[in-house]
Image 1 (cartoon, one colour):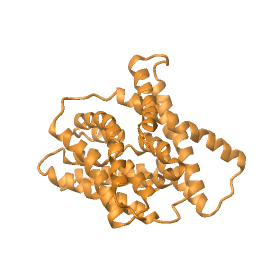
Image 2 (cartoon, one colour):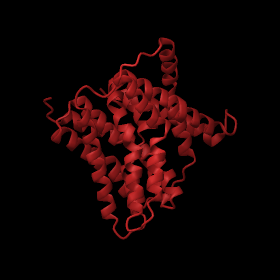
Image 3 (cartoon, one colour):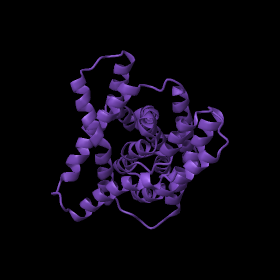
Length: 307
């Protein structure tokens, strides 16, 4: 079955956000900030908490999921960092080439393609994604320097985000079998249902504020790493090394082939890195992911999976 009909409506919502941000109609000025904060601080944490509370960690292959994704992720970051030896932008390129938009793009896509079971495999990855990559970025950027302040600040800031806190709270409640009132759960589920559409609209609006530059080789390196190398490495680790079930492999590969995360641009810009190249890679990878997802799912489908 073609996955295009499942993906196109998601990008339709993203284009709606892009169009509103570009034209300023029909919403008033300042809507984007309000919707973004509502989505990031309330609606998405509701979704993550209820999902983790309901599903917890996968009953099987929990460590396989984490190791399959993060061995590939860390390996790719280090490879990009080494390849850019001598460049002052190598930490920025390494971050952009490995940082996926798992929340605003990955969750809606995985939900549409695989349903709630697929989301259960995504949640553990989301819990550590920003923490791992921002720690790697600041460590790489401070390589050879004594200043480790940004690294410590990033770790503490990542641990205190609503996304991480909601995941940890949901997992803790699941592990201790904490009973929650039905009226509270119903309220959380209502907010959770609004999270993914709002996330897509906010993502599209964010792209409207990101500039695009002429294609240069560093941007091409980011695109190749993000949409080809990372999914390929995740496929190798999940299928050939850890022998994951086919559904888990598909979810992990789809997550790995998500476009470059917008937070990579925010972090690089605030740290004085090559934000222009990263912003262009975000725009291009957002469109090219429409081709990457069907391609990688076809690759996974073509493998002689027997488990």
